[in-house]
Length: 212
Image 1 (spheres, rainbow, N blue to C red):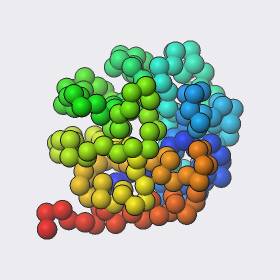
Image 2: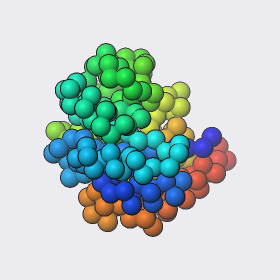
Image 3: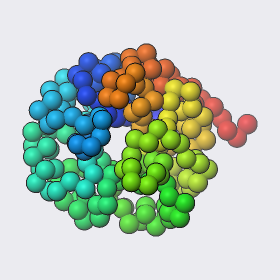
């Protein structure tokens, strides 16, 4: 199975194009003002408009109100919504777009229960847990905590880099991986070479047979 790749925290059209040229499947636009990767909707619209066919634009929100989400979706034309706050399933499903639910890997999280609760999500993005931080920690978590029967719904995030994503793909076999800081030269500024290396590492991880 080919692992899908998303590069999140895009703030410049040239970075979106570099990701697409490297073979990335989706780019993420952060609509959470406290984030150093926050992008104004007007700029996000210019980024989304430059994407070639079949590259998905994803809008990331954290406990945003429905009016804000509607304005961003209308202005930017994002394809998919990624929820990183305390949003309930009904709220996630109420915005006229397919959606992904981010789950932070607290010690006591019941992934099977959360997967059932968010059955309407296109996927479950699993990220490292740090109190008070909704995502983008740059930290990994124990991938062994992910049940094998959930792998085809998992978007694996949390501290991924060109140096560790191959191992992550080989061990977890997630549907997709999500990277932000691991391919940056500065917050929100992506490095073309690091993106290319990340994609290469994902493909190398796919080729590893962990049963050998």
